[in-house]
Image (tube, rainbow, N blue to C red; front, side, top):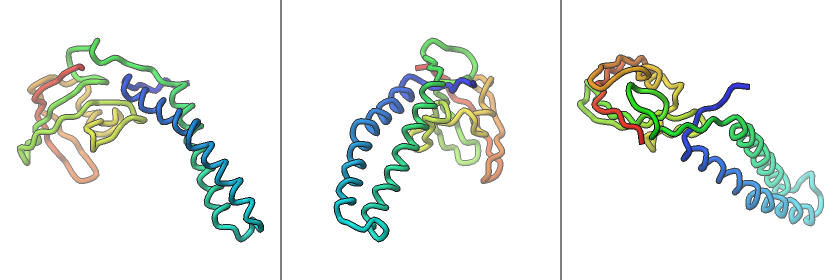
Length: 156
């Protein structure tokens, strides 16, 4: 089975979500189903069907998180250095708009662009891997080609 790389923060976040689902969400859904059953005819009971749908989502997410966490390979970026690799925090200069952006390259399960967490399998991250400060990279994205200059690389 292939290991899933992730940072300690990403692992802890997913582990906390799993605990929340098991200890809070799952019991709440079970109570909602039991309460809806008490209302009688299940075939026309919207509350029952909504609770069952929520249960399906919660159980599916629990299974997904259990699989991800069981295959996780936690990597400590602070022990790394050199050219860009997993865990690097990279500051880029968009050569078209002159806008600076900072991203940390993380695993798929913890990626969130709004928080600056870039999926290692994204076109931008793949283009950055192995590059050094001062290098320029060309990235083909669904929105068209972009050019970035690497301003800094940190491992925190």
